[in-house]
Length: 469
Image (cartoon, rainbow, N blue to C red):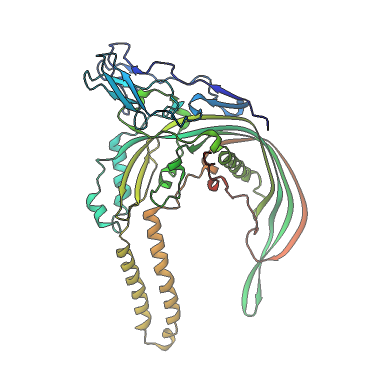
């Protein structure tokens, strides 16, 4: 198999690791201000504008071939996370563990030393999206989220809950742009009649539908499909960590990413990338196809009962991979069962999602009380005709309890929360060619929708990344 040609754009600062000094006063204490949305020298208060990344294509429709930022290069498993830098201020040697941070203060002269150029362990990306929400704003959002769920919350959690310990974290993602030509072929159904027929004293609803062969040929550009690039965070169904709630706070305004500088990370934590592009390609290609399938729904509205695509061909003619750090305010709490619960805030948009540990005993007790009240109302009914309704009350009691329990549990754990990338990823359909042909007419259908329709399906969500060999 012939290897594809990949263009690599060098996004590294090409600066030596060490002290980044303010050009005005020479101080090394340059950090990012969430209030001013700029890098600022903490001594002379000079403000610095963000730098654009050169060589990275802004619009997917202009892509040709495959391009990758140098921050996406494969991780060297033998790369050392521990890097020792010599302080230019006093000559002391300062150790930085790049698995946890990319800068540190000299313990003697207090100068800040930074990892500037990209290294082989995945700790330095191509771009960064700076924090926009200040800590106080994030605390308010997390508090509001938890307050709405305190009634059934775990009692120990309620006592220990505080937002003082929330952390600002930069999580690693891949931003994938793609330009493609697609051709989808299948069958679609259009409802022409809905009616009821009386059978055995019961009314049955039926549908008549026209069946068409459906073809759509199109061009599509997809901008900034965003996918986690840390294997821990990719496991959104983990039982030990509620990772899915972090995924659910997307999308980010990734069009505002800027060139990476270690100064943006000062005062925040970061998590390094540990997944290579090659391990993500299959999953990403499935997600790109999901985006295209859902975009096509705007072009098949006539088929109100659905479409079953039998052939889905998406030829990608241009693709771009960019490694990014995206900002999240994170609250975490480990319950007695050792599950780590998160409440996460998108530090750009304020979108909040979380998981709150429950007092399941209290919820179960309230559920039993609700069922008991409904049953008591039936048993206390003396009128014979009304007493016949006992079975109805019993049925209502039996289903009300589980429904109440399920709804409340869902609200607290939010296990189904996810980033709906198939709808939220920016895309543009162009040059759409429609070719439809009536092939059949079906009558007395019992379902209100096409039984094997798949135009709303997603497959990338369930595609696992390839394991490292």
